[in-house]
Structures are given as structure tokens and as C-alpha cells.
Image (cartoon, rainbow, N blue to C red; front, side):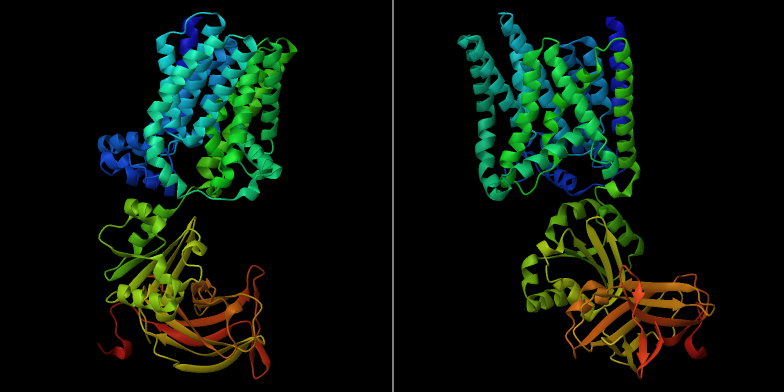
Length: 634
């Protein structure tokens, strides 16, 4: 029996390893991971600095060694989390075996296949390490209590294991204190109930030793945390507690990567865990039931209690309490006989299918990408030319840029303080773009936090041609051609509805080649205050009406939405239309207009009060073959 159990555990470890290493580098490095890499690249003494991160330093210390041995690839920097996640599997078996062997095996199975645990075992952050520490803490805690209840002395190695695993947990993430607090409450309550007060003394000694080990870091880091604390005390309410509870329990059951409609099925797993809580007490393990419930409830209350001091709440913060939920779920499905066996099979299959589906979405559904900054930089590198400049709007992207930046390209960070006024913005961007032909603008995160008036984009929209605007997860990439417009070359007097007038346009070069940028400036004017934000379309059509190039964007790439236009003011709207390199020579028609998104309703085009259609035809553009010259002259 023992060898069969060892073989089964080995198979579960191999399964856990396979699930955690499968597409380990499939997700791009995202912001927090990039910060971890940046910290790990500092000298070791700086890694231990309290100003580096809001979390304790243990994971950064491990990552410091990892990058020097295995490099900085996504696989390498995430592999320590894989190992930490695998450690949870045998620990869960041993914890469940304290109740019965079947429960231990099932707890190990759930730990191996849990999409929530796998998700954070594939991330170069401290969550998997803290989970391993808290699981070890719960196991050694209960084993020590078992010795005391038998009135036997607790072995020194067990006290050492409890102290070490607990310190690993709290030196990885502060929320691990929720587990230690639940353990302390349970010990004090149990000893008080049993009237064996001397039993508290070894616990006090161990906790005191742990406190002395953690105290230097706590003092060192306290000043940094005070500067980052929030004060949203209105969130101390029952509704917020309910939200934290629901989000956390569903994440424990089915992870974070299921569509909302499917995720609701996770409440079935929550029900199984609640059944397990009742069965634990019914099996004569009332104290274990109280302890597991206390860890869960204590974690939820801990998160709710400090939530107003945190910028936001994420389910991953309470990953440290997940072992309690998984063990209760295993209890709810183990130990059944006869007809109950069918319940066990159905329940295990139900959990397996939902977690498999969650993992599929994690690996394949673009809606659950963590970041696309690497794609932003890869697209810049693929289209870069000599004379290009990268403008980085938001300093929080510094770590990601350091990791993904295209080699050999010039770049400048736009300091948020220069974006406070238009004068400082113009002074900085004039100096930054001097001598460059094109500028790639990378807006990262929420612009309301660093450039709420979009001054960087607005300045570039006034002084350059927008050639590309692409949205990514967490970032927007825009390409501006740094050329001065010549003024109106083709006057017009065309109205779009009764709100907007096109006064004319300019276009260059007169005769472009395939692969060139066609530089177009539209000169708009608002006739009245405009209540809607319209989208401009610029379409280049072949003679047979086929669309060969286009740009659809709010005016000036979103810097001057029509809803903010002042009647009578001239709006310069620059576009750089990229001609396909394989475009056949010949005449092409350039059309422009506006529509309301998302209804796609185009504004009618009026000339002298008569409706002419829903687009404005500009001049025909003649595309020359490569290697020829306009008018036959070099």
C-alpha cells in the first residue's frame, strides 16, 4: 500500500509539473513580473532594500540567483514559481492524510489540477512561494497540536519546520499573516478550553523567535508602506465583504479565467467545500473543521479589514488560504460508500472539467491575456526605420521597456510633470523630436493617471501625421510622421450634416510609390457645438472599388474629439496612409467622411444644401511603379 501511494504521488507530481510548465512562456511578461526582473538585476544588497517593492523580499532574492544562473527568459524566471507550486501537492496529501488517506490523495489531486494554483505557479511573482509556505505552516501547525493533544513533547524538527515554513510564507507575502493569525487564535482558544495553559509556552517561544526574525524587515519596510497606503474607509461595509468573499471562493473553485456565465458553476464547488466542513465535524474532527473554517473566514476578514489601506483587492492575495478550501472540497467528496461513490465520481469529474476549461481559456482565450507590451515592442522593431524615436508616455512602463526594448532605437520618457501645461509639453517635445523623422508614441496604462488632457498626443497630432494607431492590452501605440503640413492646397466647402465643414485638404507627395506614406491633412471646422464624438474614415480605393488602404480613428488619433470642437475654430487633422508595398501602379481614389461608432452611421455629405452621399471624394492619386520618376524625369 505504501509503495502504491508513493507511486500515485509521483504521478501527481509529474502531472502538476506538466500542467505548470505547459506553455510556461506562452504569456508575455507583464508589468509586475517586469518589476520583479528589474529588482533581481540589482546588486543583492539593493534587492533587500525596502523601497524596491510593496512585498517582502524572499522571492526577489530567489529570482536574483535565478537570473544569474538561468538567464532572464520568461521560462527561466517563472520556473521557481513552478517548483513552489509543485511543493504544495505532497504537502496537501500529508495534510489531508491527517483525516484519512483517501482524503489526502484527493486533496493532492485538487492541488495538482487547480487552475487557480496553476495560474500563479506560472507567474514570476511571490504568490506560489507564499502558498507553499502557508501550506507547510498549516501542516506542521496541526502536527504540533497533535503531539500536544497526546501529551507528548513536540520534536524540535517540527517546531523548526513550523517556524521555517511560516517565515517563508510571510517573507513572500504579507497576507500570509492571515493564516498565522488564524493559527494563533485557534491555539489560544483550544488551550483555554482544555485548561492546559502551560501548553501555550512553546508556542509563545516559537512565535517570539519568528517575530525576532521578521522584525528587522518590518521596521525596514514600514516607511515605504506608509507612503503607499490608501484611505478608502467607505469600503468597510458588508457589500464589500460580500464581493471579496464571492470573488475569492469562486477563484478557489474554478480560477479566474472562465467567462462569467460559466464561472457561476463554481458555486457548486463552493457547496461541496461547505459539505466537507460539515462532514469533517461529523467524522469526529470538530477541531479540524473549526480550524479550516477559521483559516477561510480569517483570510476573508483580514482582506476586508485592510482593503481600505490597499489600492485595490485581487483574489491572488488570498491564495495563501486556498489549502483550507481544497482540503474541505476533498473531504466533501471522499469517504462515501455504495451510492455515495457515484456522488464522488460526479463531483470529481465536475471539478476536473471546470478547471480544465479554465486552463483552456487561460492558454487560448485572448480575453485573459495578462499583457501585450512585448507585442508593442515587436511591432515597433518590425517597422522601425533610421531616424525613428520612441516616446514613452508613463514612467511605469520602465521595467517592461527595459525587458522588451528594441535594440539600437532611440527613446525618451515623457515626464508627467511636463504634461501639466501646454507650454511645457511643447518645449519638451520640440526638443525631444528634433532631428527625428518619425516618432512612436507608447501610451501605457490609464492616461487619466499621467496625461489626463492627452497633451502629448495632441501636440504630436498638431505637428505630425498620424500613420498608425493600434490598441493593445494595457497600451496604445501610435506612429507619427514628423513633417510640417503645407497649408490648404485644395480648398473645399463641403458639409457633413449640419455640424461640420471641410474647408480643404493638402496631400503629399504628389506622386507616391508603393510602400510610401501618403500624407493627408484635413482642415475641419465646427459649425455648431457637436454633441457626438465622430470617427473619421480615410479610404483609398482601386478603380474597381476595392479598398486597398484605410485609417479609421477619431480626429487627430483621439486627441481632438469632435465633441470638444469650438465652433469657428480650424481643426488640423493629419493622417499618414501606408500604401501596401505590393500595390499595383495606377490611379486610386481617396475618400473621407465621418461616422458614429458603434452604430456605423455615416454623416450625410452636403454641398450647396444638396445631399451628395455619405463620403467626400478627394483627388485621384496616381501610384507609380518603383524605379520610375514623376513625369518621366529623375
